Amino acid sequence: MKKGILLVIISILVSGLTAFGIVKTVNPAENGVQVAYSPDAKMVRTVNLSMSDYPDFTYAAEHAVDAVVYVQVKMKSQERQYYIDPFFRFFFGDEGQQPRENVREGSGSGVIIRSDGYIVTNNHVVANATEVTVTLNNNKTYDATVVGTDPATDVALIKIDEKDLPVLQFADSDKLRLGEWVLAIGSPLGAELRSTITAGIVSAKGRSMPNYNGEFKIESFIQTDAAVNPGNSGGALVTKTGELVGINTAIVSTTGSYTGYSFAVPSNIVKKVVSDLIDFGSVKRATLGVTMLPLDEKTAKDMKLSSLDGALIHEVLPGSAAQKAGIKEGDVLVAVDSTPIKSPSGVQEKVNSFYPGDSATLTVIRDGKEHKLKVTFQEGNDEVGSVEEDGTVMFYGAKLAPADKGVEIVDAGNGRLAKAGGVDGFIILYVNDQKVSKPQDVIDIAKKSKRSIFIEGVTASGHPGYFGFGKDD
Image 1: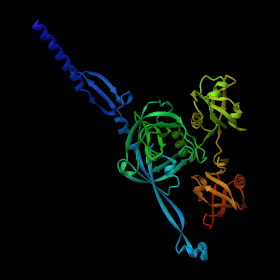
Image 2 (image 1 turned 90 degrees about the vertical axis):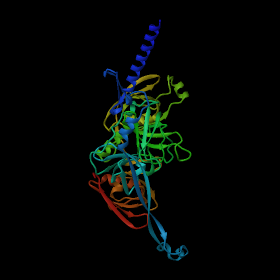
Image 3 (image 1 turned 90 degrees about the horizontal axis):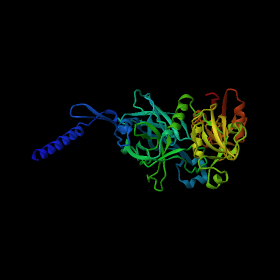
Image 4 (image 1 turned 120 degrees about the horizontal axis):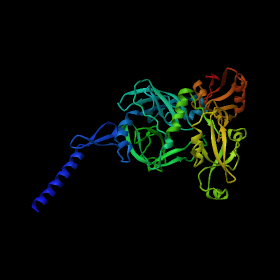
């Protein structure tokens, strides 16, 4: 009996030591892989933590952090300043004023997407910037140029003169799942907290936010609970495999600081925008030509729909791609190609992935029956002639509005007109030597021009000014 008890004890000890030996020989390797060996040096198991459900973010964080940069900007503005007692203005008028240049500074984040120096950030980070500098994670600083911007998606592309830079590869944001772990990397609250990494989960997809200023926006945000603060704008939202799935853009807060809700532009939208900016200098945007409403319970019941997923077609614009495809008011759009549509923002996101001239199959519900319609997308006309919700008219990236005498450049934007010298507040009086009194005059004259557009007028300070540009610049 004593021998039997002794054998049992020895057996337990051997089993314990064997298990201990296996655990002790689990060695971390590169790329998040762990390999376990038995005491006889035979491999037992390989575990890739970045591909498992175990929330280990070391590989993703270490892989991504060097591709996220700190962006600093300077913006110059002028204001009138009295250089004599303001009382004497009654006698001397505006001669008693002189312009004073103010310099404002701002900051944000960016993500290196090409090893030759292309960096994606937010439009609101670099809009109207006169100087842009970029600091890498290794503390090297470079001057940057703005390649292009797209206010509709709040995406901008800048470039530094450097090679062999670390980059982040784009993930497919359509495959992102609710509850999936993600990392937010950026520089919240300025330079002192550069390269900060926070973790959270995907809280929602296809989010949109209230648009208070009437600007055209394409919004289908990824919502997360990863902590993001001012300064994170333009930074990376990264999957646990270290791929770029979004560009952090905004927070919803009553205090101005993080309160649990942060939003990112999906990588599939970002990828197309930056590709267009590199290849064409502007975004080639496909349009469907409809206005949409979300489905409510009453509408879905009246239409005998089984769910609230889809976008209710409220209006079909004459001559649009939608009208030519046979879409009608009252249809419910439930899919674009093989992608299910849950809301109007989902339609925006999907259509924005196409180019003008591309075709797709739309699935709509009409009178309780499913119909497949083939559509060929048209080119968005947001550069010349389109009317915005605020009543301004687009003209080569700028917004025009009627003025007392002529046409005012309300917002010069970042397009061809701004690059040629157009600025906010400039009053256009003549286009190609022809007097103008409303935005449509400017557009009509420009369309008739075969080669170039020459604009004359006065600046916001009342000084004569002029500039010009080629139609094919």
